[in-house]
Image 1 (spheres, helix red, strand yellow):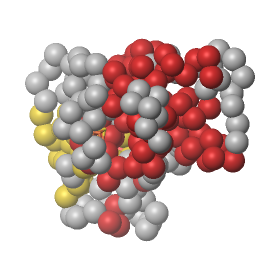
Image 2 (cartoon, rainbow, N blue to C red):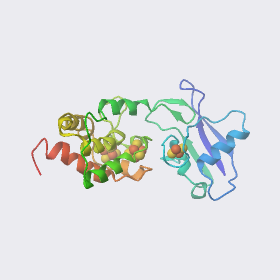
Image 3 (cartoon, rainbow, N blue to C red):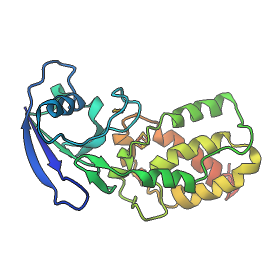
Image 4 (cartoon, protein in one colour):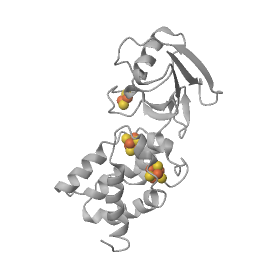
Length: 226
Ligand code: SF4
Ligand code: SF4
Ligand code: FES
């Protein structure tokens, strides 16, 4: 098969498509396998990120055949004879398939995603908190979100999902401020198209998390409904 990779040496360089032949040896070979093995034999290694290779860290997110996905979770047996690899487009490119996702960390800081007191706990909040904690911070949701822009106030679901955990578990004293931040940085920007749900590699229940957060931060708190 052929890997068609959009390469550039650094962020100032012009991107250029390069073709590489690769012969998978196993049904279990993924895009990550191909990149690893190619880098062992080519002179100019392809720069990409990975850590866990188990769909747990989100580092290997890239655009594969036009869809944001994890390289370690994209099996070559499910791809066509040519596989197109590009860096995520909503972030500045560092080199080849590596992007700078620092804006996601800044957004988490804007949302003040930490506890200043003991967390509340119940069967319901535990379930929500667990689901939200599975977010990989990969950025795939931002790639397809029609409303997300790196320089805007809307954090997309990469901020909205962790916020869902906080809204479920925060001690009462911290809830007002968290609800205000959620309204400003998530609720007001989100058009509820749920394109993000369809690409989330963690398969998160984004609808369920949104419903709970909207109820907690908007409908019950702000409009006094429910
Ligand atoms: S919500 Fe899903 S797609 Fe978005 S950052 Fe978290 S794991 Fe990735
Ligand atoms: S529901 Fe739509 S607007 Fe909201 S975060 Fe997901 S893709 Fe973006
Ligand atoms: S390397 Fe960790 S999710 Fe792919």
